[in-house]
Image (cartoon, rainbow, N blue to C red; front, side):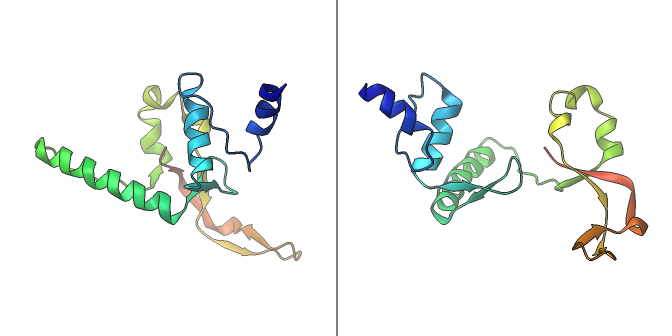
Length: 135
């Protein structure tokens, strides 16, 4: 009965239960992030807010990886966050698996809703080539 109670509490955001890594790697990783309070979910699907302690760990990991990359004679590169849809379409066979998860930017400006409903995409600000947020 104690194991059943532990399993019930394992899904609680306040639980300190961490799934065994060998049992379910993805769940273990997410449990570790949650219990260590390194990040929290964002209102944007698929995004996380990395907290200061989590960012500090990421900075340390990135610094170590950068050093290793440079030691092997390679160079780092950064790419734009937004990719024109036409660019991504050229490589459709490479993106097939994750294309359905991409967010698409279709307008370059918002405006006040004339009906008082907050903000709306300005119909006069449609992008010629929609932008995909880099996966």
